Length: 268
Length: 355
Image (cartoon, each protein chain N blue to C red):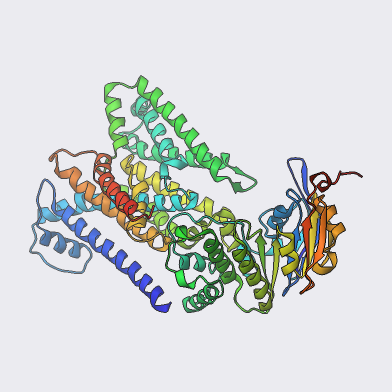
């Protein structure tokens, strides 16, 4: 279990996170949704141990995150940012192999892991190309391969992947590819936490959903249960209509089209 | 895959072996040249004798003396400085993720230069009170102290709560270098012709005056800091992704950052104190390696040591021969042979769309 417990984060007199508790379960896909400025990225940075929270604790597999060394932490959690630039000319294979940095594994083991993750991400075919020459979608798949290489080893303890809007600049096919893959790797005793921008994708792939607004959790629970018109409207302050796919029963939303109706007045 | 990776390791070995062999040839060639010309065969024999690997009395006694007391300490110092400058530049470029970085950016050269010019111009009265040898050894010590304290200041000013902000660090370095320039300008304003000449030559670099005694003091620092920087190759590869990403994959970024800056400052500070300012090597040698081979720091760092040493040894040969018996300032030569070569590489890379 990857747990945030009553996290508060304040900077320059502003409260970004205001008592957030959250759990990421191994083997499941947990999605975070919320409007811009809700504190989603800050929460991810606190969870990744990049930021120190003003209050509250984060623990991984029952152990406080502060007690992990950077290397030990790299063994249990990997992070995929929105986009990554690589300085100097590295090949795809070299970038993927960077994910193995924290492991003190045999070169042969590193190679077979890199080969496996390049296969599942479909990057094996261009492993000798320069990273800079790739398209946005290819780059993100290479970065996902790097992240997977970090936590691919089958260990007795669960591992976790944090994704920060991993598909924000990709076309729909690439978006589906990345989310589908993230969903698949959950089976390797990996817990996935992702910040997802597209609500329909969030409900399509997530097992658990957290709605965030103003640094607080508005609602959370199993995705299909909490994906309701009222939760979405309260979180995003935007009128939506909720439908169900007649074939699969999958819920989806379409924002209300009348501009006068779209914004809900904020009232207490 | 196995084959591909093994091939890459093999290529790394070949590149390093090739650079090492070139350095050896350049070194022997350099040792033959000077006021007394010594045949390459004698050079090899004398070197082997010194290393205790070969017994022979068939060489000229004077050649042995010239080599062991003048040329060998000089070439050892040249190689150590070239290697230290090359690897410092490579490590700092990797750390700051910026191809334009050179060692002067962290304030070390500016700090040294300002301290030295102040000593040269205003330190005159000290020579009355201090013994001659103390006064003479003051210049390298002052250069070293000035360089290292400037780097500490830059590091201190750009750190908050144990975190070093790279953007602030670079800008602080720029500010400190501007301040150093002002101090230098002010000192030059008060300098007489002789002091001006001494300082100008110091800024152009000088490899003459190497002795075993100086080396005995400086070599452990140069070898230590150069060797220490080589251990950061894998962390620097990770840092190519960015600081946050490097932390995510298990690099202790803050510790790595401080150690690299300190070792680079030590390497450059000691070099500057021995030979004055030798520009260009720290900036260009790592690029030449990256453009010619690849960007993996497990190759770039050791190859920058060998490449920096090679460039400085060759530059020294030219500096000592073209205006013999006088000598050209070494800094002039490194730029003269390095710049056109670098531009040629850049044009080639541009043509192949690698930049």
